[in-house]
Image (cartoon, rainbow, N blue to C red):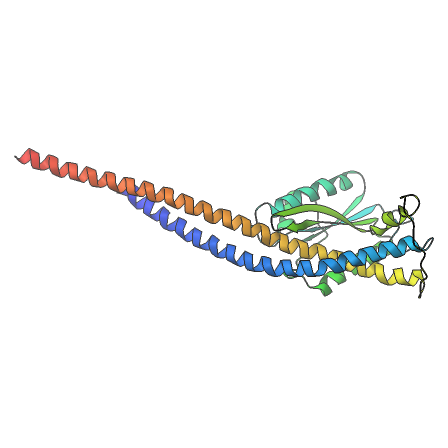
Length: 294
């Protein structure tokens, strides 16, 4: 009787867990659809802005911008921004990002440079505390990051870079490819990627740079475009991180729901067997007792 009671309690617990995970899967699906729309809507603007900066930088000749080139004097410090989630139950999302961040940031700290580590998300804060990598600042932008908040953070990075307080700014986050594929990556936000692109454009790259006339000057255009590009690029990282988190949570909750359903069937089968064995035993005892009275 004790085994039957135990199996019944476990069946009830598994059904409760299955309902919870199914609900979380539906919520994650709704949030995923919203986040994917935001990420896809901003992607063309991000790509066009980057391409525009690359073309202007290539055609500008000797005109340069401080955000395009490495600092003249090294500060001995590099900045890392790690984007994680505030909540768990999203599969390997945080694990993949944090492992990549540790592999990338720890050599900087060990190699003699000062490491400035900023973390977005509570899961990253707990991890780096355990890994004994001190974080300078922790914050969260939630499931729906606002451009104004991200732009303020990007402006802070640019001010620190121009002031010579950091040699580079790297962003470790999850890049959204499609609903079935998300890839952790390290993006160098500063100096911007257009530096290497413009340097390799033209005769060295086997192409021809189209002559352009700038009005206003190329210096003024770059001064306006590059900060915009840095801000939208960082915002795109947060958007990709948000949609990747919901995509992986949806998959994790679906797997948990399927596992609970499968385990519930096993428990029900074991419960029926135990109940049948109990009934058989009781019948045997009744028949044996009646035979003893004859």
